[in-house]
Structure formats: structure tokens, C-alpha cells
Image (cartoon, rainbow, N blue to C red; front, side, top):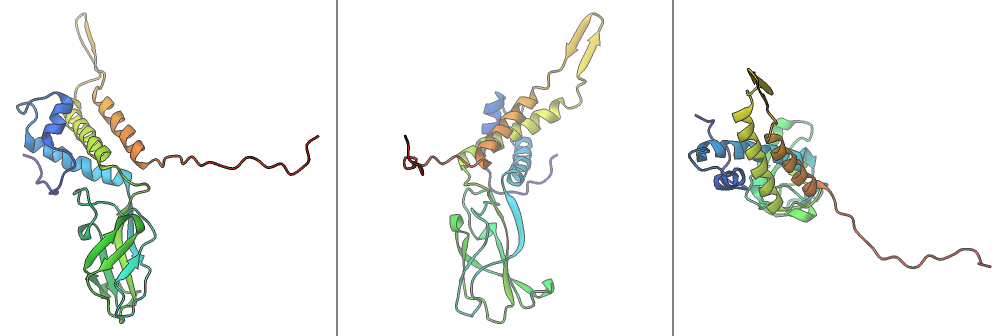
Length: 218
């Protein structure tokens, strides 16, 4: 019934979504909820990270160096396994920096997420004109517990939204009047609140020395 699931890792489970909505499996089955969890995670990734394509990495291309750096970090988890590894980035060696057809994918060994540093499995040949990387990064370090909660709320919103989408906002039958209050909007507001917590940089409080006066007091 539903589109084949594209992802293999999930921040939350079908039962997490059901618990949030107080529903039993006969009202929200795993197949349907997994579809919306899939959609929610992909949308969450777009909301909390930024995409970088073909960034030329820093580091010597001399046939022996394997360590390179990128400008933006923390590097994002794009396969939703709550860790950042070689599957989350793509590194290319370009024989001609002006010709994309000459680029070849290189194998990544290690990623130092919070430093924007990558280590390749073997040193790129000095014949490469440049090394580039495609990746996503977070504007702030992400709390994966919040990411799981945000995924749950967004998946629940999408599930409930589709159920009530075609209900008119107002119905009347004789003296009976009914106004639909769009309860699913509460789920989306909670999702937005959690995203805000994830991407907002906290304030740093520092202790300063006492103020020094530059003129004599009388």
C-alpha cells in the first residue's frame, strides 16, 4: 500500500509514535507509521542541517597525506544511525578540477565530526588536481534524544494530518454545528519547538574582570 521504505535506520520506532498518540496497532499499523517516520526523518534532516556540494577540502595532495579538513562542522548524520561515518559523506578526487567527468570516489576511513577532519583509507595520488567532499553539517551540535522526539512528533503529525485532511473546518446538520479544531497542529508546533532547541546555539556566560575607569573619580 505504501511506498517502499528507503531508509534502514530510524531515530524512533512505530511504537513510539503510537504511544504519543495513544493508539493501538489496529488503528496505526507498523507499515503505515514506518512510511511517515521515513518522511519525517528526511524532513528533519533538511530542517536541522545544511548541504555542501563539491567543497574543496584542505590538505596536501602529495601521494602520502591521508588527512583533510572541511570548512563546516559538526558533520551531520545522514543515514540516521546516530553516528557519523563513511556513509554520511562522499569524497572525490578530481584529475581535472574543471571537469566533473574526471572525478573518482575515494574511500573514507575515519571522520572527526566536531573538527571537520576526514582521514582517507589511502593517500590520494599526487596526480589529482583537487579533492572535494559532499556532506551535510549542523549549525550546532545535535542532541540525538531530541532528534528522536522531533521525529516522533513530525511522524505523528503527518499520520494524523492525512486522516483528518479532508474533513471540512465547519459542519452543520440542522441545529447541530461542528467546528474542527485541527488538533494535528499541536503536534507540528511541538516539532518546531524541538527543532528550535536543536539548532539554537546556547548562550555562553563568562566571568569578566571588574570595570576599570580611565579617568579619576572625585
